[in-house]
Image (tube, rainbow, N blue to C red; front, top):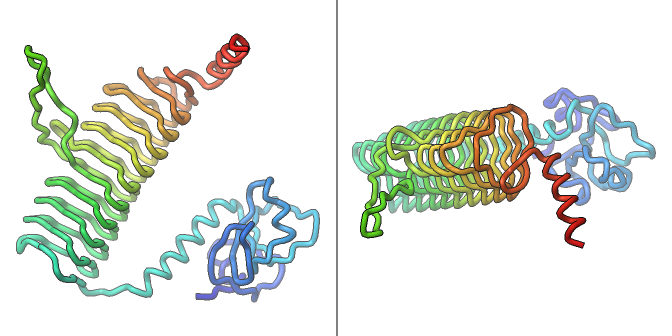
Length: 332
């Protein structure tokens, strides 16, 4: 679908600089811009592409003043990063609208319990299993080979990609996306040591509660609680290959990069950022707005909001860099 620069500017509350009738039909990175593309520029190291791109439309910050002639029609916005996210969302919604149906679409073969409830406009692809007393909201898309256990509750506008497994009694809120092969509600890692050195399994009888607007990446696991609930609060974004253990609580709008892990009963605050391969031990509390660098290990409570931590054990990043300079000097 083609959109004019004027239409895009109106959607983004931007200002057109150039031809308002220039047409864009697909988003692209600025270094790969070609006719019909809508690109964006925000990082100064890509500025040279601004003057050579063949893209039709270019989103830029309002503060940007070009040093040379710009061949593309520019749309000046408050924040180019946010604008491109909104535009991608818009393009994606147009793509989805092409296939929207206001009636249920259920494909065979499938296994759907008679007591399961499926909302209006929801699509259930082939080879899906929906167990007894499960409830799925409106306008969801359940891709092939998904398993939904007994008493699972799923809200509206949820997308479950192929291979997702949601165990019994778990709850998924509205507007959530679970990518391929992620597992929600597997048993937490609970074993009691015996005198003979063997281990007795501790039953995991809780569940997982995922609130609204959460996205969870492929092959990520969120374990059910031993008792109570493992809680993923509103707006959390979790990358691929992450591990969330039993009884963990993750605060609103926290983000986790790939291969990071949180051990049992840890509580992570709101608006935190956890880098790739970072680890948090169990039974600790992490303050709001904490940033943890990749491959760092948090082994104690973080009480002060807004700290940036690095290393193992994780400490203030400035302190870590000073220590690293000494390590490096001594290693020569």
